[in-house]
Image (cartoon, rainbow, N blue to C red; front, side, top):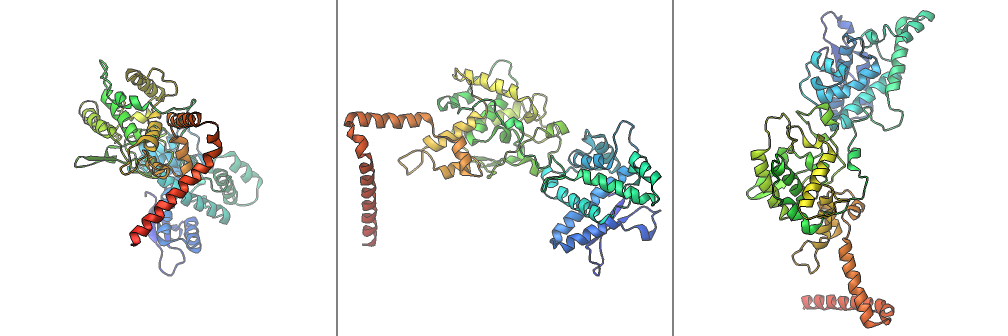
Length: 472
C-alpha cells in the first residue's frame, strides 16, 4: 500500500488490526484511521475466525488506500468523479490494473503500481463482502472522516456548498452527511446482492440458443473429425482439435474454449483434460473486452471422462495444432486461439457456427438446421446413456446417475434434459412391442400386467435360489 500500513493491534486492544497513515506530515495522534478501527472491532464482536478477520482487514485496507489515492489525484475534466464512481471502478482496477478501460482504475493502477491481477471469484467471495461490511459499518456509526479520506472528492460539489451555506453547523458535519448519502446509494438495495454487480456472473447469454439444438449424428461424428483439410485453411487442426475434444468429453462449448495449456495432463499414453471455472483463477494476458466474454454455467466435476475414438483423434490434432498453428507468444494461456493469436472464446460465435456447419456438410450431414458445436455435447450424452458398451452388462448405456457425473451436472434433472433417450431407440422398442401385439392378438394388452408380475416373480425365485446355494 502507498498511503497506509496495516499493523496488528496490541494484545490488550479489542480490535485485531489498526490502519495507520504513513505520510510524514501526519501527526502521530492522527495516524490511526478510526473507521477502520471500528470495523476491526466489529469483526471481532461478530465472532469471525482469525483467518477471516485477517483476510477482510487486508482487503479493506487496500480499498481504503485506493479511495485515499483517488481523493488526491487530479483527473481530466471529462472524467466523472464521485465516491460512487470510484468505488465501482475498484473492480476494474483489481481485474485489469493498468490495462483497464476505466480511466479512474487505469490512472490509480499506475499511481499505486499495481502489478498482480485479482481473480473474479475472489472479488465475489471475499473482497466484495469485506468492503460492503466496512461501508455499512461506517455509515451506521457515522465514522467517515472527510478531512482524512473523502474531503477532496466533495469540496466542490453543489450538495456540499449549498448545505454549507445554509447551515450553522460545522462544514465537516454536512460533508459527512453528503458522503453517507453517497455511500448509501452505492450499496445494493436487495439483501444478499453483491457490491460489485458483475462479480458473481457465471454465464452469459451466449449459452442460450434461438433454436432447439439436436444431437450430432453418431454415424457422422468420426467423419467430422477426419474431414480432409480444405485448401488454404490455417486453422484446420485447431478446429478438428476442438471438435474432437467436445465429442470426447461432452463439455459445453464455452468450457472447452476456455481450456488452458495447464489443464491438459498427460501420463504415459493417457491424457486427461480438466474444465476449470475461469473466474476461480487469474487470466493473465487477456484484455478487459476479452474478459467480459468469459462465462461459466457451473460444473460439478473438473475432470472429464473421455471416450474413444475421439480421445485419440484429439491427441493427434493437438500435436499438429501446437506444431503448425498455435502461437506461444500471445501473452495468454488459453489453448484455442484465433488466427491473430487472441483467445478463440472471444471470437464471433456465429463465425464458429458457420465453420462448424461447413465441416458437418463435408462429413455428410446434409441438413444442419439445429446443428451447432453444442450438438456434440448432446451426442456425447445420447451415446453414453443409450449405446456405450458396458462390460458385464447385456444392455448398453450407463445409468443416469453416472451420466450426470460425466456431464458435470449438479442435479439429475439437467441430465434428463441434455442427455435424452434417443428417439431412434424409443422407436425401436415401440416397433418391437407393436409387432408382438399384432402377432399375439388383442388379448396381449389385457395380459401385459400379468406377464410383468410373472417375470418379477421368476426373478425373485432365482435370487432366492442363489442365496440358498451360497449358504449351502
